[in-house]
Image 1 (spheres, one colour):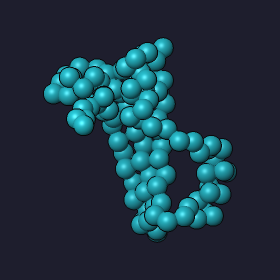
Image 2 (cartoon, helix red, strand yellow; image 1 turned 120 degrees about the vertical axis):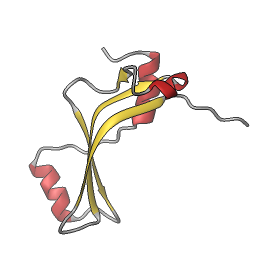
Image 3 (cartoon, one colour; image 1 turned 90 degrees about the horizontal axis):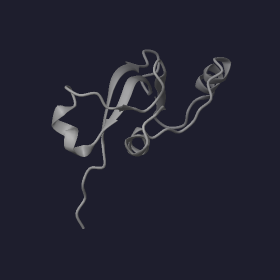
Length: 100
């Protein structure tokens, strides 16, 4: 069986590590886009297909082990709704049918 890339995902990431609790990591991914596999060597020279609408950001809350109650409370207080999002799978979809 031979595997090959289905897309290339690019994004600008800002990452934070918990100062009080280093098990907490936050990432903010801006401008995520997908490019076809044959564009791999050109990722810094050509724009890709956007994965999310302009101005939106993917926020990932990562925590080793179970997410503690205090963090769940903060997420709820901010009105955030946890949901799964695969940049890779969304990239495949966007290359088939661009966001728009």
